[in-house]
Length: 258
Image (cartoon, rainbow, N blue to C red; front, top):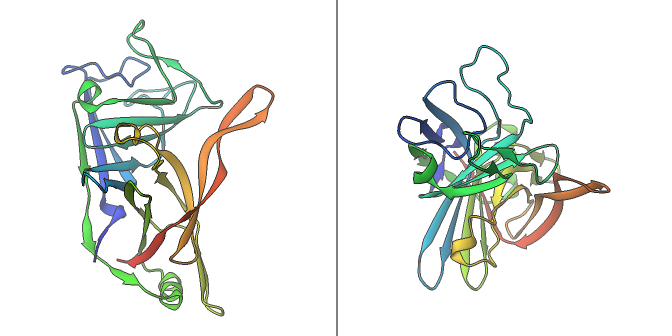
């Protein structure tokens, strides 16, 4: 079966201020051109059963907000963890500041603010976005014994999780990073992420905007628990983004050896 080699799969976005002013920067870029290559953490494909229409989303690895090519003060303040999500024609930038709801001014001054969930059309802010998926042949591991043996042999593994309701089918593909293995009782359990968690109660036009980051754990093929990154209250008037909401789903889980 075909699987993604996440070690060789990337999304690259290109900003060229000589072509268009990006809507995602909070400072004057030191140089007019930059290509940012980011490893892909997850691919989520959602199919609408009745129409057959598909939407595919990829999650880029977390990085920090920065100034590229400067001689000092690389990190922007306030700084944020930054995770980009891309579809064929849209983007969703997830930024984690010290508090939920932090906004920063866009550059140039007077052009508005950036929220911690900024979305838009690719053509309005990027010169280009390239999604490069490396697909390889993989082998589905059918038993706990096969999975545990592969883990202890340090073999590369990816996971496929399928979710569905009456309207949609979703396939979530992601690398297995942390995984537990017990060769005495033949037990395994993933503990890996971040992955994309879709809200399948939404209309097609809202699927991207309602994607959340999550960690995923399963120890059998039939169900999975996600731990979602959501606003979490830590004190009066202070909310932070934290992986704190547990959601259990019926699912079809597979572990694939590359």
